Structure formats: C-alpha cells, structure tokens
Image 1 (cartoon, rainbow, N blue to C red):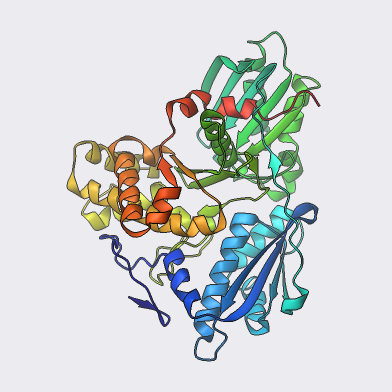
Image 2 (cartoon, helix red, strand yellow):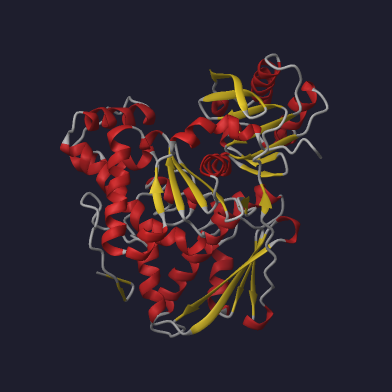
Length: 460
C-alpha cells in the first residue's frame, strides 16, 4: 500500500474499513528515508516545555508528504501534551503553513479556539531555526495514592455522578446518582449536584480530612478549563465553572481538595491495584479518554486528550462532528466506532436510538454471537493494535488498561484478544513489553471514586 509516496504494509487490515492508514505504521516508514532534522517544542503552563526531534525528507518532490507528516505529528503533540506556544524549528516553509492552518480562519480553527480557551491566551506557532529550539523543561508530579484519614472521592461522569466515603483506604459508603450536566447551561445545577454528593459522603464519616475529584476535562489546578460536564455553560459564566469544585469543598469545611482528569485517575487506580507504573488507561465510552502514570507513578502534567489526536491518515476517514477533523481517536475508540462500523457489517441501527442505545443494540447481537457484530469488534481490536504502535512512541507503556462501556461483554473480550494477536504477529517486541489488559480484580476494588479519594495529601 502507498500513501503520499510512502509504502507501508498491514498484515491485518480492518475488513470493514480497508482504507485505514494507521499513522504510527506510516510514520515508521516515512522516517526511513528522511534526513533533514526538525524539532518541535510545545510550551504549556508554568513554563513547562516538551521537545520532540524528528526528520523530514526536505525535497521539493516530498514537500506535500513532509507537510502532512509534520502537521499530524504536531497535532498529536498538542493534544497529548497541551500548550499555548509551538516552536517549529528547522523548516520555515512548513512552519508558515502551520501558522495559517492553526489560526482563527484556518483549517485547524477548532484546535486554535480550544487551546486559546484552555490557556486563556492565543495559540502561537513560531518559526525558528533549529539552533534556537527551546530546551526541554518537563515536570512529572506525584498523583494520589494516599489512604490515611477520612476522605471523600467523587467521580463526575456525563450521565451519573459517583461518590465514596473512604476511611483509611476502606470504602464505607458509596452511591451513584443519575444527573444531566451536559444539557444544563446554568452551572448552579452542576454545583448543587457536586455539593449534594459531598454532603452525602461527609454524613457517613466522623469528619472529612480531604476531597478528591475525578472529572472529565482539562484542569489547571482545580479549575476546569475545558470540560464536557459544563458543555452548555456559556463562556461568560466560566468564572463560576472554574471555582465550582473549590466552592463545593469550602461548603464542607476547611479541607484540601484535588481535582484530576478522569483518565489519569483511571491510570492511578491501576497503579494502586497493581503496585506499579508505566500504565496507560484507555476508556472507550461516549468518547475516548486516556490517562497515564510513569514509572514512578507520577503524572506528566499532559492533557492526554487523545480523542482529538490523529490515528488514521485516510482522506476518507469519518469526520468528528465537534472538532471537524478526520481520522482522530474518538472515531476509533468509543461508541462512535461501533456505530460507524455497524452499517458496514450489515447491521441496521434505528436512527431514533441514542448513541448509547445503538451501542447496546450491537452488544446484544455480540452476546448472541452474531458474526456481523463480531466483525465490528474485531476491527476495533485491529485499530487498537496499530495505534498501540503509535502511542508507545510518545508514552512509555508497559500496561495498557482498557476501560469503558465498549469494553464490556464479549465485544470487549474480542477487542482485547484481537489486539493481542495482531501485536504478537507483527510487533513481537511490543507484545513482549506491553501488557494489554482489562482491569484486574485489585484495580476493580480500588474503583474510580475511591482512587479519586486518594488524591489529596492531608499531611500538608
């Protein structure tokens, strides 16, 4: 197979999506003939800078291919690391094209707007000589793992909120409440729901020493800067959103509170359950959610919003309705992937069903061993195997923990076994290094809200 002059080979091409061009596989082949050095530095809050070095071909004949590689590579860095300034060093022509693309009127206007809202300053793309590339300044930090005292753990989901009362690491009470934060534009609704859960958990303990929160979104400190929980809240009320968790904690008392991305808390739950690091948690649900802890069980301070990071280079890939881009992770590792592939397998889904109901319909067929449903989940397993090749270039992974409603039942089992089989067949080194797995029993016992409870260090 060939894309933009680069030949690549797939031994296990998805049957329902034969045009799939895994970015990681193509990238490996692209770099074999590349010789011109470039560097990309991404700066985020508090002066932290991540630097990646790569090579391009640098010839007139390969100009379009070089741009495609660098644009997708830079986009992956933005959505994995996060940042408000990107220095493209060593190729002025490409840097200028990226400046036009990542602008309010450019092809990547969504990305520009997202990061401007996240960091509350315009996204800058700088054109610099290779010699002027900024120095790396990374700062992994510990996350949770504290079990002493009386703690509240809260997990803010898009359709339900879960809370646990935890005393010295033991869950003494937990509850799950249905709510509808995504459709409520008044942040008072979310605040009152959060506070109600806090108060319920507090009533089950003699005191509250700390509060930990797991929530969808990107946070600076405890402030949600972008979050689906507040999807409908207008930006002129975002000051209320940024203080929502701190205000709810203050209503409980003078106790420390720590808020973290739900993907990172999933990875933390795995680290607490398995007693090790280098864990990526990948949740396939309404969208794709990813978290990671390193060898020391620290988080990197990255946003890891891989739902919007590219995984497929096919020009015919399905577009994401929100970001408008094609070939991004949420269309491959979420219920959207199942809904996308089902008609191609000959499964007709009622348009009146919600996305969650459509997923359930395909899963019901899967439980009955319907070969059409098997084809859907088999192809998602192929997607995953080839994307593990890509993710492992940017994250040091030894355990890939698969979570979310897509991974439930026989469909999840087939995704897992297919991924393992493809890795074993084509990428023996990765198969030997990375354990692709469902949460083990210890991790399940820790749970998301209980792991969240471990976030604050109450000794400080």
